[in-house]
Length: 344
Image (cartoon, rainbow, N blue to C red; front, side):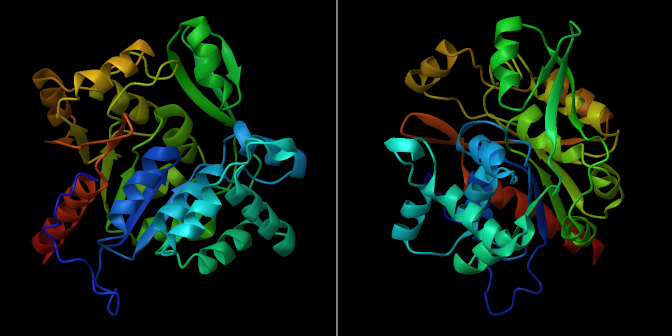
């Protein structure tokens, strides 16, 4: 964090009923960063998390044990956990030697829970109890889904982890992503949370491989669209090579609408803070660029009935660019509270 002092009083844990009900949809580092901020403002958080991951330690467990990939779930659980630093350090630990090299202890913890209870959803709930998690973390589905990307040149890439790698080699834009099986069912609690939410947040996170998979699950888009909650999309700070090369804010929004429907976003939150050159150079060498918005794009979004919120949202740690979780959470809670006051 950059030390921004919250202007809102942090929620009273003894009376969480009136606290904003926030549903977040996504996965990866972006979502877990946001959750660390949100839990300081409300206990009523439901994180709906992608389980389309097929790479790294998660992919190995998915293939070996036939379970859903735990990586993004683990990150979100830890972000919302109220536990000792030593426990977090243990669950984040990655083995460096032997057959477990590269595997996270937290992933193994979830795998063990899954085997004990025989059900991934129950395993996550039990781990949530162990870690004293604020709110809920839910998989987008309990079905074994695989993500595919169709490129502008007609190529199809199979597998979430392959999409940015293969597309960097091919050098084409992603036209759309889809999952197999197509008719995958959402978790019931996820639908209930969406219906009951004051605010639904898409992102931040990889557009096509973290945010979009959740929106491909049957009924999710319709429920988000019908929900009375305000709907917010948080754009990434940087483009992602092989996934969103040269994308502007408008490109991100259009991609979401293309996969869902017009009117599913009420607000877009985007960064306008300049990134230090030494940090930025590292990203540019890797093929990434800042995601920026122009006045023309703002006008286009306004005509689409989408309001733009611009702010300084950068947090740099160990030369990695992240969103400032407190600044983002402030904006989100502010929008919810203003909406509530208007309705009253």
